[in-house]
Image (cartoon, rainbow, N blue to C red; front, side, top):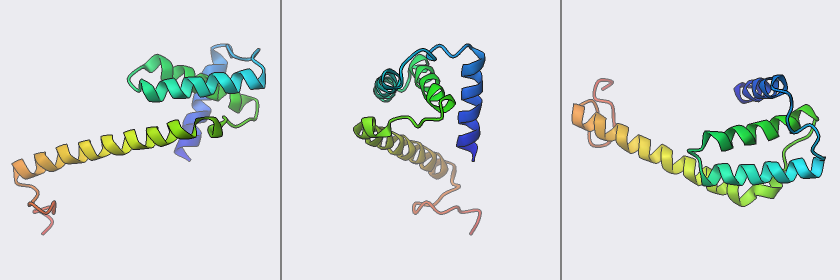
Length: 114
């Protein structure tokens, strides 16, 4: 539900800014969204690319269409791998802090809970 609300908020914000991609054909919109999605995965630190992808996705939503996920399967897999790697890195950092502070034992168990 939360992701749906976020998508709805993004579509409302995009519409309020004037729907810059309204004149695109469905095919051109799909091509531009796929290119923006690939660019966002390649450059996750670029807020401008994330905004472009959200706007193009919002135009799809406002037309009652789904974005063409089938066009970016390999990049979706890459994005999932990036997210998993970041999760692991963050977890390792938290584990290291917990071990240094004495809150976790070497098996990752919370000492205060035991």
